Length: 215
Image 1 (spheres, rainbow, N blue to C red):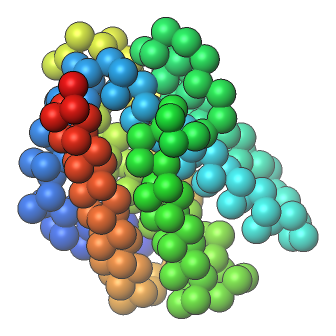
Image 2: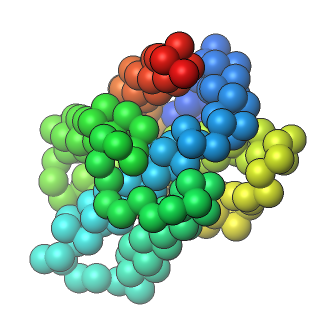
């Protein structure tokens, strides 16, 4: 399907998040220079990517698994591995699994994903949930990782998200094609995700401040 507008324009995501970008950038600038906290943040991203790959697997188990879906699943699992590997590189030790001790805002992050999944499924139904959940998450991933990449380029950490961003951008285009031109639903679901993400980011900011004050 050829769309007349981009997913960014159709969703209103960038406009709705413009007021929020400076907060995200400031947090990332601080976190990349704080190695212990950066490791825990990276492990949180690994967990979210893992939840995404698990969502794909579970939602498609009883359906015809296409090559494109398998590729999407494999790449999301690889993204989880990428962040886990870098979390352990920064930490200088193993960070097995996801616990409160080794994952920044573990419970709020898991709740963000769970509430987003449940909320979107209620609106679009089980049959269409894979495409819509993936589309909304890809919008967030591309938005966040682009800012993160810019911050990393100015930091002492040489980690690069460029190849990961290219894959996420490809997934975004695929999911946009899959979900069709229901732009009203896209705007509504993207606005819902923004509310949930802002709450999660607030918890991350609170945790960063609390740990600084305790140090």
